Length: 290
Image 1 (cartoon, helix red, strand yellow):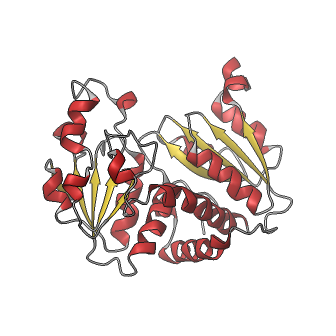
Image 2: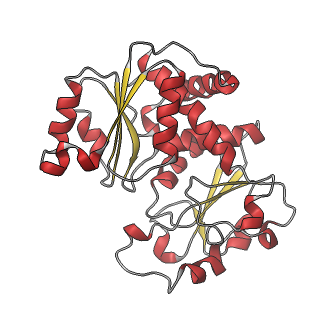
């Protein structure tokens, strides 16, 4: 397979099944030594809690050493280009560099400057492949057969790398996809779309809520997040007793994306996603580096 993971399209269906099966094996959370002697470098130019921490835990659980570059105190703050930073780190002979950047396309470009594997930890609004993989893994824990299942992706879809990667990945597994958002937050697409949350949830087996990424908006779309929540917050009144699961990539804006009551509901798999993130990233590292 490709030694880089820039988006889920870099993976064949066979690669994806291997990753999912390895993640199942890693459910025991036991340490392994399959990456002994390997070094993983994390470079995150955007804030991250779940992704950076889970890559760190995943690599260490497989026996690798981890170096996390503090971007604020690195030479990039002195004017060194991102590409020179990557080339210099590559000369230290790491096995992989995990990179997150606010600009789409950066991991792909960096892959031309290094000899090690590049893993995309999220680039702008372009892609977040390991998030999509862990979302797929979480969905498959609830539904064995995904064909003809329907997922409603709700929120700031236009600016979401999570939505982009999930649309590409989940469509390959036969899921029906409905995009739910106000007009300003919907991308140009051939997929089913609606502005009506209740209508979408009435058809959905899976609901994926997304954070409103106000930092990527060129102009104000809603007067306040409270106004947005009145139309698109996932509440108990909306989901009622339906047989569905709720996902969110985090961080969750409580009572804006999902309300407190739903977050405590057994159908909400947000914390399962966090646990599964470690397992999937262990499996990705194994696939790329072993």
